Length: 307
Image 1 (cartoon, rainbow, N blue to C red):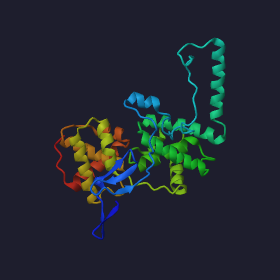
Image 2: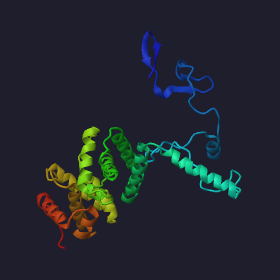
Image 3: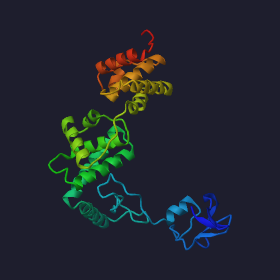
Image 4: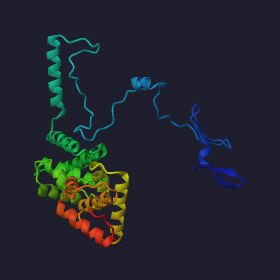
């Protein structure tokens, strides 16, 4: 917001009245004609494009940085197609030469022990992320956390699998993606105890703060896997909100509470699901679902139809 002189006082120029003159490189106020800023440097390209194809053809930059690749995607890659730039097949002698280039290019990408560690860890992270169906934002966050752990020397003496799994769990907690520690640990060679130990280490050494797990974060995922309607999932979230206001959620497993709320909502909306089905999807036991179900019905005084 800039100011202009008016009758001896300073008044701000409205933001919606400020325009940019591309020919002169100046910001001008439409009301007063005052030049607010001049000699503005154009940060865009020096070329013009009128179609998407023309813009892509003239662009001289690569793709964005990818945290899930050990070198962030900055290195070059030699194509596996045995053809030249004109699309013609290479001669046998030339093909062998290209194979040699490709071999040494791959070796040159991974030179130090840190590069080898990151290459193995990023492959493991991508594998677990795909098995869990995690979005790219979570995988990028996990990769960033793992890189910080490598820089601090936290991976030394510990298995790569356990630190990667812990990084994924931290990323899920930070971005509020409902994945339990047991669910992540089952896809790794490391056991749950080791992953939990690495998780606590990352929080302490990297000074990472994670929000408290909320049972409502599990509602959408469990409901989607059970093919429940939006009305049932909304009512389950309302049940959990009432239970939280009454202090019933303190010290309880969020997944178990969400499973019980889903079970109640499904009964009331005539989308009957068994406790066994819900327990399997939520990753808890039937006993947990049954106990949380009884507590919610009794304390919230819910009227459940006869089964």
